[in-house]
Length: 358
Image 1: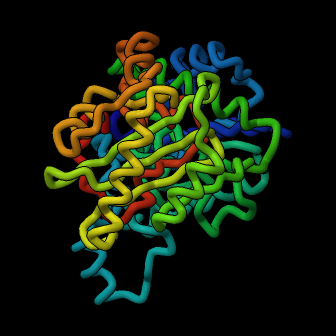
Image 2: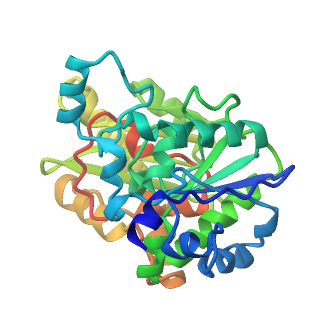
Image 3: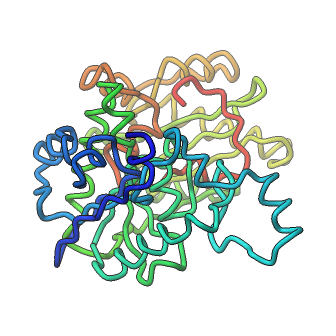
C-alpha cells in the first residue's frame, strides 16, 4: 500500500462554471485506496453542508495529486542547503518561491503547473485553500496560523487573473482537533459570501497614523461625539518594553486614528499634550466606549498614566467568550472570523507587542 499510495495520482473534480474551488495539500489514504477525490471523507461534506455550500458544484483538487513518501511533505522539497548546493552544479532554478520547507524539487513542479492550469481554466470566484501548502501554492505565504480566515488575493504570476483566496486549516488538522471545526465552518461561510463576485470589495477608510497635535484636535472635532451610544468609541492600546507604545481610537468603521508614544515621536511638550488629549477622551463618561480585553488596557492606563477610563459599555473579548467559549478571543482572530480584513499584524515589519489578547 505504501508505494502504491505514493505513486498514484488522484484526479481533480472539475465542474464547469464552479464559483468555488477547494484546494487541499495532498490526497488522503482513503482517496488513494478508492481512487477518487474525497472518497471516504465525510468531514468536508459536513462542513460544506453546514455552511450552505453544494460540494458537488465546487471544483476540488490538490496541490500534489499524490501522497509524499513517508507522508512527509519535505520529500517534495529541497532543503535550503540542498538547493544552494544544487545551484552550484546545475543551471536549473526553481520558478516558485521558497517555503519554510525549502524549494520545490524539479520533478515535483508538474503538480503546480497542473494546479495553475486547472484554476486558470476554471476561473472560480474564490478559492478555499485548506492547509499551509495550499496557501503557499496560491499566494507564496505559508503561515496558515497567520493568514487563516483572511480574504487575500492570489499572489502568484502563475495564476492569470487575481483570485480571492480564503485560507483555512487542513482537514487532517481539523479531524484531530474538534475545536477547529467551528473555525473552518466560519471560513467556509466567508467563502460562500464571496462566491458571487470575483472582486474584493474594500471598504474605503480614513486612517490617521502619524498625527500632529493639530491633527488630534481636528479628529476629535470632526469625528468624536458625546452621547454616542449607538456608535461607541473603540479604543485599544499596544505595549512593549514595559511602556504603552500607541493607542488607537475608532469612532466608526471608516475612521480611526493611532496616537504613537514610541521614543522620539513627539517633542517633550507635545507628548504631554498628546497624553492630555487621550486622558480627556477616556475619562469623559459621556463618550461611550468599547474595548478588547479592557482589564488589560484599563490597568495599564491607570498604572502608567493615572488615566481613569470611564464609559465602557462593551468588551469584544468578553462577548466572544460568552458566544464561543471554546474559541480564541484575540483581536486578530476575531477580525478573521467576523470581518474580511487581512492579517494586519503582518503589515508591521516588527511587532513586539506583549498585550495579553494577542
